[in-house]
Length: 203
Image: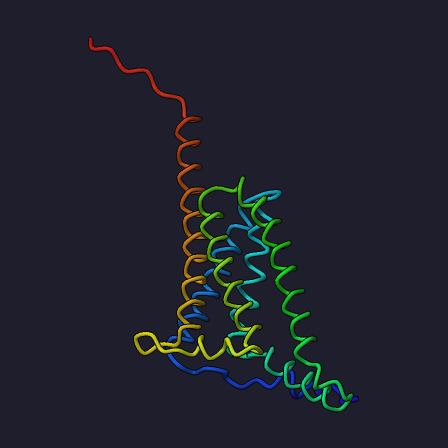
């Protein structure tokens, strides 16, 4: 059985040095930064929602350029050849995609319950996460030649980058909206707590 090389996993090479790829990374990191602010300002279930957004955004932003899944894919391909089940790899891949989709559905259901009580910003961020999840699932299904569609150029940019960027920007916008709403809410509460001074009567 082949050993999983640490050098193979942590091969710190830029996966895509194009400007659009860096915009996607920037969107993910921006979402992570805003989510961190919300984690520090919110409480209970809403805090957990933004903590999940923070972790996912950081992981996706880093993996955008490290492309670790390609290293794991290469490893398991070699393992299949070495162990003699390469001819049945399509069945294994189908099970993997089904398990990934099931995990995403379960996670999505949990996030929907969290976002339902967390305001419009959280719901907008959730829409972005759903779009990113669809992108990840399509990338996983590239075993079945979906990757050919994702590499189609639209206005000079790959369709996969456009889909991912759209999702990342929605997550960022949702986090920004949540921060604005919290700021406005604090201002309103502050005005309500401030006692009004009685108007001075004329002499």
